[in-house]
Length: 171
Image 1 (tube, rainbow, N blue to C red):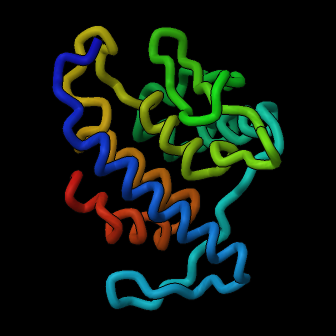
Image 2: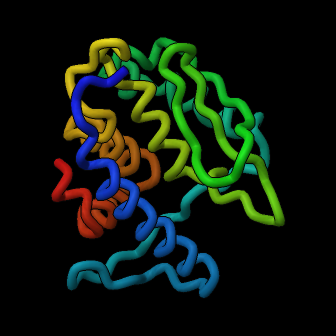
């Protein structure tokens, strides 16, 4: 159990939700240029996944990247993906290195997208002992891992959008 209070959790989820909506609107309208914090930004394409198997293949590929392995020793530990009951949250199970994602329901699959998957992967890459964590689950080190993954894999515009929508306050 985490001993530190996870006071940034709500801010992290709110910023991520705003950016997901931004990407959704860009996809719906076919307009990738948006204004964020007074800057015109061309949003990169965010990958979407069709199945648990495609998420697993994506995570295996990300964890095999040399720069990921060089930066985070836990990248050598394979993370598994499983379906999760319910439709309201994805989560990471540190005791068994599993990411649980809600399945497609009612023609929606909100969690089968790159931002959500990289969020959960950032938890997996946490080097601290899950029984004695050095910081809260969504603390500054988590924010750094998630922004690095988003910026390097989706694109620097994704990391910029996350910062501008509230992640900067979480660092």
